[in-house]
Length: 484
Ligand SMILES: [Ca+2]
Image (cartoon, rainbow, N blue to C red):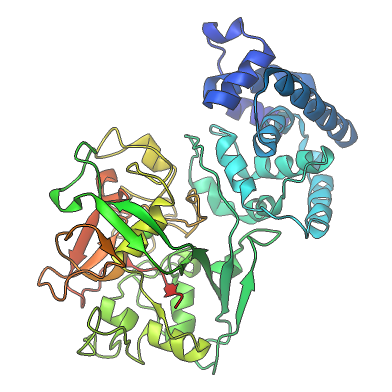
């Protein structure tokens, strides 16, 4: 593994880096997220640690942490524990022989079991993003990060690292661009759909954070997980100079007076099957359909008359009622929670942005409307396929494959475009709990862009709309529930 990682890392020393001390490089990374400096640190220390047995690696990790803290303290650099682990990991990851992996896993599992008090499991994801593991084998890096964290006695939770180990589909994507987002803790609502379409109810439970062990495929199939999003005010739409924008994205202030829950993932094919008892999607390969997002479901299927693909008559925004045969109707009936629904367009954009104002919720703007490296890390796009059994790197992606936003929501950019409640219309200016037009021939709103389309359509502010009876392999949705 050491050799493999070293080859994969392949960092090149740039002349301007050669004269810098470790401390300089650390500081550059800590204060400016200078990825080249980070790479140079990796290159220097990988060799130093190569061949270490596990015990030695743990000891060196502890020593390394103390050293780093001392250096940083002298310079007054506030580098978070998360970033420290990222640095340590970068040093240690190239030093772990393949034969030690079982021992490492044992350490990780023990640590998971004893880290029940961890309060910010999701910060591990932020660490991984910040770690800037360019073209590295991400799952193994996650594992090593966990070991280093444990060895160093950090209070950084390691839950997601184990999930990463088993998620082979992570190999599908190349995390070639680091982002600097912080994933914060939050409250989660979990529905248990395992009883399937004939269940009389879907048990509801709550979590105070991402579970130790992280989200698993179970959370994308037999369970449905939603994250609590706080009420708040934000700027909706895009600035006039945003690359790829359209005139109907006029910036204005949106205020959401009620907190709401938002799906962590797009609703998957398995979740749909368990609730509705059918499999409507296009991408049906048995090896992956379970965790890909459901598509070819209409707005009416999701919340009105699913049997006849028609409206219930008086519906949003005149009424918040849903049809009993619809996905949302069944969720409401089997949970007793009367506000399960699609998000409003404003809720969707607020949740997508998670405090960011740029085109992408990683805090970046696009530099190219067609394809953009910044977009590559946050969602599936430009992966056209008309083959229902297509390879895993085309068509829709397994949900949660790309980086989450700061609120821990995945695939807000790309993958399936997501139905929102509203009729499409020009924004009418600053508004409180905006609910869209009373009616519009233009159709119902879809958000976030599509697996087969260009980067510009995946921007946070980008809007689409189609007739609510449209069933298309581009369109899916995410569940929401507004708190009253
Ligand atoms: Ca999406």
